[in-house]
Length: 163
Image 1: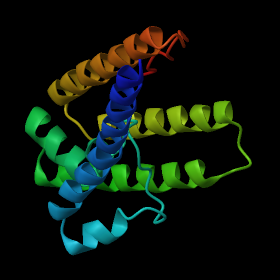
Image 2: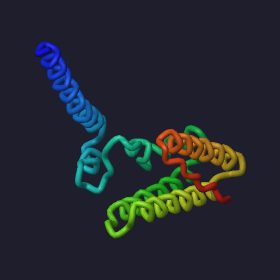
Image 3: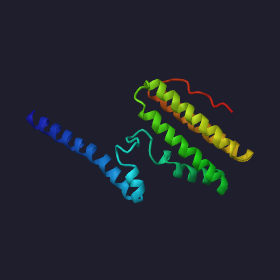
Image 4: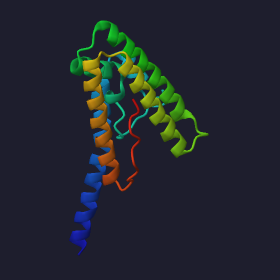
């Protein structure tokens, strides 16, 4: 009996150590792959959202522009427009996240509204073929988010994109 208890305590300590070390290791790897300017911007307390909620490289405007350029074959002019739109979205999203007067639902609503406005602005900068591909990308992402919410038990209908 004592032997089993010691075994469980040891296992708990081992798992706790792993759970602590993993985020620290991931953060160190992320920071080592960034330039010094990017690293300073991503330090906790610098207005960035940290954690395992999908916020990171996927939401970095530069990374998003690169991904969209690859998928949609954006011209240099389009890249500049999209980058400007995404920079503005990120700035506004940061302001919304920091607004402690908003309820969680109001914050979510404002973020969805920001995303919709950005999508509309990006779409306006694209040619018809790119728009079609972009719409498919947005629809795929929204379906993925809908599925994620349903799995988590928060089955709320996602707003349909208005075009």
